[in-house]
Structure formats: C-alpha cells, structure tokens
Length: 195
Image (tube, rainbow, N blue to C red; front, side, top):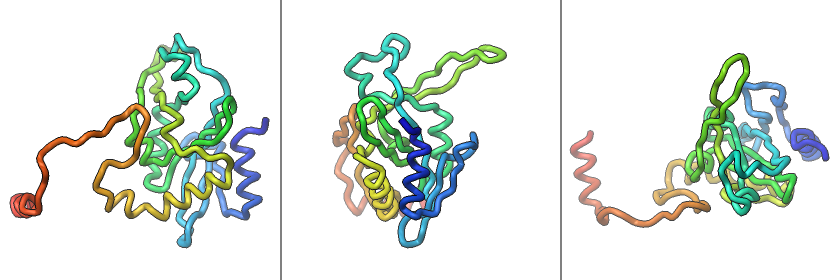
C-alpha cells in the first residue's frame, strides 16, 4: 500500500492544486495548499493507523481500539501553531476511510492524554493523545476530504467568531445546559462594569 503522504502528493498533482510538501520537516505540518476563492493556505499533517494498538499497554478495550488513534502531543501542538487554517488527516489502513480533524476539533474534542516512557540517551516521557476517530469527519476518499477542508475554511468566521453554542458533537461527551438564563440587561451590566 502506498503511504498516505505519497497518495496526497499524487492527489494534489491530479487536482492541479498548488501545494508545498513539508513532509521531510519536523517543524512544519506535512503539506500546505491553497483553498477557497482567496486561496487561503491550509496546513495539514498526514497520519496513518497502520496496526492495532496493544490493549494492555494503552489500557483500552478491544471495542475502544477499533476507534482509537494515537497522536503525539507535540504533533497536536504543531497543528495548533498553524491555526485556524490547519488540521490532520488520518487514513485508517485497517478498517478503511479517511478522517479529517480541524484544529478546532483537536482543541475541543474529548481525548485521553498520557505520557509514554521512552529511552534514548536517558529516560524521558513523550506526550500522547488517545483520540476517537469517530470525532473526526469521515471521508470515503481524498476528493471528499478536500471538500470538507474547503467547507471548513468557508465557514471559518461563523466557527471562530459567531457560533455561541458549544462547537461539535463528539463521542464521549455530553453537553447539557447549566446556569441561569442570560438576558440583555446582564450584558449591559457586563459591558458597563468591564469597559
């Protein structure tokens, strides 16, 4: 099977997309490409689920494992550094499909964060996130992935500046309602007392 990075390069070329391949860099996301009318640069990291995870080592059940993907904490922070035009695509080589996670999804969705022991020249820890693939947008193919990215960029103002309710509906999270009903008079008080 060809790697996801190679598959993306071929796809970008087939689509005549202006893209930059940063996959040999440890400081940048794997690819950047223009989207939308304004040709906003979108930055994406390409990841693959290539094997099943050890249930004992990661303290997960077999039911959880099929939906789990593990990403480095550092890789997630790197995606955050390119916000708001950034995200991650994961190809599930075991069950099929592609999953797109915008930086917004990565920031807001539930996750399990752990430190994995490593040993190079000395003992150290490496941060890892266990995320549920179902919290990403599942795409059947790369054209669908590109369409999802374009839609995300087109809706950026609403997503980042206008939507008042909690963003997203994620597996493992239940958003209920709390607090008293806010009325316009409260906002006037807030403005008067904080400006």
